[in-house]
Structure formats: structure tokens, C-alpha cells
Amino acid sequence: MQGLQVQSQPGATSIRRDPMLGGNEMAGLHAFLRSRCGSLKAAFNELDSHDVGQLTSDDFVKGLERLGYTEDAGAMFRSIDVSKTGLVTLKSFMNCLGDRVVEAIEAERQSSKTLSRSSSEDVWKSARIPTPKNSPPSLLTSNAVGNALKSGSALRSSTPDMVPGAVAPPSPHMPVAGADLLYARIARVEEQVAAEQRLRCETEQRLTQHLNSLVGVSISEQLDVLRQQLIEERCQRQVDVTSLRAALEAVRTSGVRPGDLQECVKSELDRSIGDIRSSLEQTCPVSPASSESELKKRLEDSRHATEQRFEALESAMKEATAAAAKAEPAEQLLNLLQQTRYLEERVDSMSSNVDLLTSTVETQARQAMELREDLLASLTSGEDKGSNGTDGTTFEKIQDFVREKMDRLRVEWNGAMEETH
Image 1 (cartoon, rainbow, N blue to C red):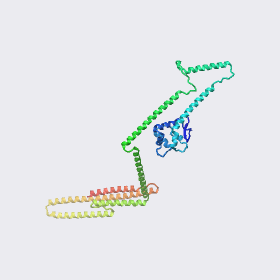
Image 2: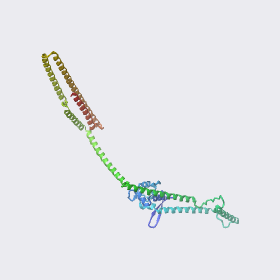
Image 3: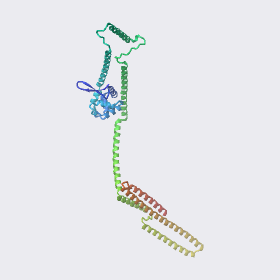
Image 4: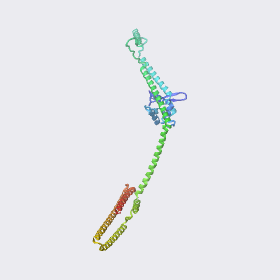
């Protein structure tokens, strides 16, 4: 059976056949929507999720899938969309799926059954042999005998219960009773399924109302609030990403220029050296020299102080020798030995301090030269990479490198000064 579509007019109802869809599918969709939503208008409102009064193909297909429809929803939409505009209004929806569609389908089904029955009867009538008017008596006798035999067979077929085990042959021009029984069973099953679906919808509605009463706010409103918060967070994240990219681009642009990079490195290096000097001056009574001239000057001062101490010790020894000439020999010898031992210890400690300070200064000078060479190499490699089009040494990497070197120098200076004192 081909599909049907009903077009309402002021005085009549016309039925248009759709080659894409069968009438059974349209009637099945009608029964499905009535069972799920109660009415066709409620079904249209359920499918119209955007509340615009029109249905697109996606809304129609997704809405039927959400309701649990398993047939071809796309073909249904194309059959309902008579004008091929891609939109279905409530009027066209009601015209194509209303009660008149079901009545028209049933009427066409009954008419098709009647036509098939009449055509079968015409076939059997046309198969009979006509009796000519001028037929001989023997032919008339044979016809009468044939009619009697036919009436007898009809009598036997009409009373099968009189003969045990007799089965009435099916009449070729009568409808089969099994098909009607099958249709009746299918109708009862559809009614049961519709009742179960209606009961399930009512149960779902009651559960939803109960949950809303328990929560205080409907779940859909909570989902809308969460969705709005998610949209705001995404917008804020996009703004943060944009600002971060702009900052990175500015840093990358400033890092490409070698002159600015060298100035930044020099200023950072000078600032780190100044921090080291100030920290050493605050922690140590004798601050280490920051240049070779100051270092030599301090070494000369320490040498003069050592010579003065040696001279003081020599004068003390001379005085002790003069005093010992007047004292007893044993006491003089003991005092001389003690003073000599004390002098040797002081000389050894001062010599070790001078050696340690000299080695520390040499080490710091060597490390300063290595640091200068490393910085020059880093700057050179950064300029080469920048000229080649690749990413050069960034300012952050050079800052980390300088801080690491300065921290190491600061720790070594502090350790050396603690050992000196």
C-alpha cells in the first residue's frame, strides 16, 4: 500500500499518495505519538524543542529518537513536508497525521479488499463455460447433472460437521479468516503497548515533579545555570589565553633584538654583583675586593700588618732576651720557648689565612672570566639563531644562568670569609 497524505479544504478532504512512505507507517506514527504524548498537538510541542512553531528535519528526527521511535523518521518528515520547504508547521503536521488520515487509510484498505474480492469473483465467473441456446439434449442433460453435482458438493462443503474428519476446502473468492485474526491480535498488542507507554510517561512525570519538589529548583534550571557558568569560564579562559599570547609575543619581539638583549644582561649582571657586594659588606667586617686593584691593595695592607706584627714580635723577643739576661737561665729558657711557640703559631695562622685569601681571589677571578666567556658565547649563539630565523636565547634563560652563577659565587665567598675568620 502506498503512503497517504490528507489535504484539508473548506468543503472536502483530499488524499494524496506518497511514493516514499506506506500507509501502515503513517498510521503507526500516529498511534505512537498518541500513545506517547496523549495528543498530536502535545506531540508537536514535544518535538518543537525551540518553541518556534516550526519543525526542521533535525528537530523532527531527534525528537522522535528521544521519544523512542525506531522507524525511518527522515522518510516521515519528507512525506509530511509536502511543499519541500524543509519546515513543517502545526497545521501541516495535523493535516498529515490527524484522525482523518487514519480514517482514509482504513477506507482505502477496505476498498482494496472489496476490489480484490470482486476481481476474484469476476475471474471465476469468466471461467464458467456459457451454455449455447441451440444445444443438444445430451449437453443439457450433462449441464443439469453438472449443476446437481455442484449443488451436492456445495452441500457437502457447507456441512463439514456431519462427516467425521471432513475438512471444508477454502473458497478461492472468500477472504482468509487468519489475516483478520492476525490484524486483530496486532491491534490488541498495539493498544497494550500504547497503554504501557502512557503509564510510563505518567510515572516519569510524577517522578520528575517529586524530584523538583525535593530539590526546590528544577533540574533543567540547574543545568541552565551550570551551562551559563561554563560559558563564562570559557570566555574568561579565552581572554586569559589571548593576553598571555600577546605577552609572549612582546617578549619574543624584544628578545630578537641583540642590542636590547645585551643591555638587559649587563644590567642584570651589574645588579647581581651589587647585591653580592652589599651582602658581603653587611656580613663580613672585611669586604672582598671587587676588582684587581682593590684586591692588590688589600693584600699589601695585610702584608704590611703582618710585617708590623713580625717587628713587634722581634722587639718583644729582644726585650725578653734582655730581661732574661738578668733572670735565671732556666726561667729565661722556658719563657723564650713559650714565646717562640706562640710566635710560630701566629705566623702559621696568618700565612694560612693569606694563602687561603689568595687562592679564593684567584678562584673568583677565574670564575668571573668563565662567566664572562659563557655570557659572550650565549649572546653570540642567540644572535646567530635569531639571524637564522630560529628561536635564540631568551632573556629568561640568560637570567636563570646569571642568577645560578651569582648564587654559586655568593656561597663560595661566604664560605671563604667564614673560614678566614
